Length: 149
Image (cartoon, rainbow, N blue to C red; front, side, top):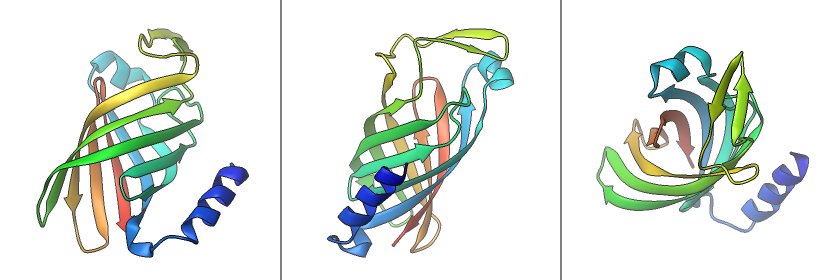
């Protein structure tokens, strides 16, 4: 974790502040009622977005594992109050078979410790600096607060 923060600090010192956003997480909503009843849906997360690239550390993913989430966001539609984006990325901290609270889950897309992700994102602009990112993935919707520098 400290190496990740050091790398971010070194990179950030060479870039313009308005290209950055701070991401604070968040919540998730699993589409399956069974998963909602069992899986963790509150996540302590902190991340940074630089232009179209996001890197986020998640202390406790849906299975209470640590995760690193990296993604590329492609803007599709932009307006004064909303942005609609395509999101492509991956997250660590997941396994093909997960045992959690007495339940067994199969993550068919996991390759080793890496789960590829793709979806759409709605960024709701609350003010000049604050927005809420709602990301719709196959089986989960995530909600994060974003501070835009």
